[in-house]
Amino acid sequence: MNACGLLLLLAAIAGCQLTWAARATPKNIVLILTDDQDTELGGMTPMTKARALIGQAGASFTNSFTVVPLCCPSRSSLLSGRYPHNHQVFNNSLDGNCSSPDWQKHQEPLAFAVYLQKKGYQTFYAGKYLNQYGQAKAGGVQHIPPGWQIWNGLVGNSRYYNYTLSSNGREEIHGDSYEKDYLTDVIANRTLDFLKKVSRAPFLVMLCPPAPHSPWTAAPQYDNTYNTTQAPRGGSFDVNGKDKHWLIRQARNPMSNTSLKFLDNAYRRRWQTLLSVDDLVDKLFLQLQEQKLLDSTYIFYTSDNGYHAGQFSLPVDKRQMYDFDLRVPLLVRGPGIQPNQTRKELVLNIDLAPTFLDIAGVNISETTMDGQSLLPLLVTPPWNGTWRSDFLVEYTGEGHPDSDPSCPRLGPGVSECFPDCVCEDAYNNTYACIRTLSSTNLQYCEFSDLENFVEVYNMTSDPHQLTNIVVTLKKEHPELLQSMNQRLIQLQACTGGSCRAPGHRRPFRTH
Image (tube, rainbow, N blue to C red; front, side, top):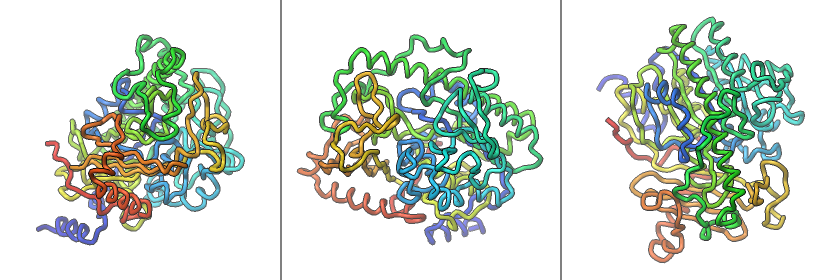
């Protein structure tokens, strides 16, 4: 056994993660993070350039998940490499700790950009950060999160026109001119300017375009695309969720014509906005190629959460514990990654921060991160160690726990009414789940509501999560429910290395 093999063996025995890339010169890193892009409803269909230039040139992960299906807590998990119970960001509100002074004091100094900057990386950020970023109570536009040398942070939630940026701590107001203000293009152009001026390697670039988040404003050249496209009607579309938790049971079934028309229009417009993101990927690729930086740069493409459009008769949104809201795209290309790989391992958004640190040569075991580096799965030859077989999903619904369990009137993004006034969220949409991907392919969820509701799905026989089998399991396999409950309790208390064990198995072999 050579020295590297011995080190890997010792690291496995010790239960820690060895820095896989420590033996190599740190490489450049580019992360493209979209907003609300699904995989289950065809959300990657418009991304022909991204799929070719990143996925086909590298690896596509088919089992990539977010640990929380909502923008701010998910982005907080991605930045920190931690589960929500450890970073303490619960939803999109300031009260939910989104970009709050507490987050800024305790979590931002531990985000991946801080580690990379200390390693000598030049760092650049452009686009949406966290939903409450830039608000007066969150430090205003003057606050620049540590680790970022060049900062172009969007104030508030996703917009395409008429928004404000924090440009290195200075307020920059944008209007409605496509040539000057369309946010996806502004992000692309400023990124190209940064690359043209970059003085040395390595660098870290994080790009967060608004697409395909509402208000779904397409660039003018794409206004008439996908005009005959409809939201897909298969699977759980417009299915009555009578055996599901309270919020799902409120949905009108079957959906009215007004709801169907609304969500079909939203679906088309979402795809239209993504075409500009696909152009961004193409421009980025060509610039890196022109500057001979492509071969020394890792490019990651992902989203903060999935989406639904008519599933279980819900209009457009996220926040639910089903696969359509949890699964996210993940494409990776870069040095040492062979093309045309399809990776089936169970990977999470909390794995990205440890991966970036691994690329930079930072010892992950010395951090507070809960995820694990994906780099060993990607390099040649691939690592032959063990890998996780389950993970935790956590979500805290918005609303006061003493209020009536009806659609709470808490403002846009919380109880926004669509054509038939279906809730997006409620306080009793608070849950924790164990999702497994192994010989027992199950999802087990417990709700913190007035009913102590439980949902369980056999994801092998019922991939669309149509039938809640908790009653059957109580009668026939109560020991399985007890085991899932104990694993849930264990992961809800995990931190750092304990979040990576003991739910492991060997990776799938794809070659």
